[in-house]
Image (cartoon, rainbow, N blue to C red):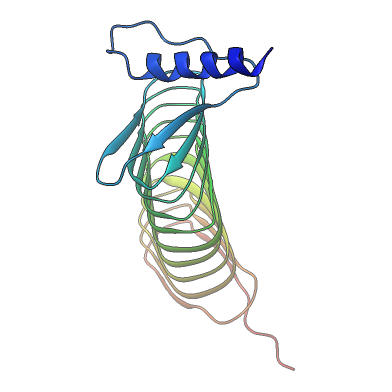
Length: 216
């Protein structure tokens, strides 16, 4: 395929993406990701199913309504994933909301995270300022979480969570360290590998494995 043919194919895909909703979805070119330019102050909507998107520029609000999409993107002030079965790789996010089921999101850090979809996975290499999980069978892994709230039935693993409140039931929480833990839900399983944790347990049938700091 010549350079000219490749450029025309990308241009065609870009034009079809901007077409009215009644237009047919563009066919994906083999091995190519559809480039999408973000604009500050505007909402970028990814609506076509089963496509690979490559977002560029300065992103404000990014909304993924497609199913089965693969998204690579820079930082954004807000990312909302409404569709199901999507895979998103993003740079640091100010606000992340995962509504769709079976979605995976990978990012270095998040200020505010909400997961309400079922069977989704969020992997944060660094810090999550505030995380709230309200769905079922979703998984959050992070290095550090400042404030964590579990209102559904999900699983969380982190090196450290400073403040955790569990009001849901059947959650699984695995931490290396935890400063404060409050449980009002039932049948939750909590493991803290080391350090001392201030605990308040008002639920029923919770399984707790909290290990004190080792003396030298």
